[in-house]
Image (cartoon, rainbow, N blue to C red):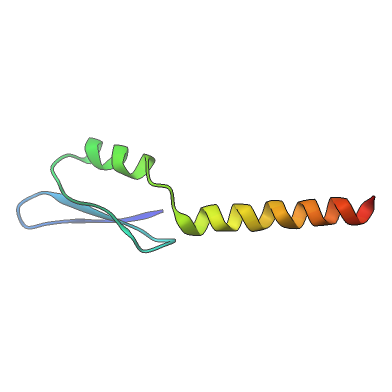
Length: 64
């Protein structure tokens, strides 16, 4: 999820709502903004996925 704002000159900014990093600033088109957001690797989401994988692996090991 991203928070988009439009500047007075018509350009856009985008901020990730998970890690609060600014993904893009002063981007002229929404298409370019979509591309920047699609390539964002959110460290918060990556960490959550890693922790979930470790938890699943520990649960699997406990069952064996």
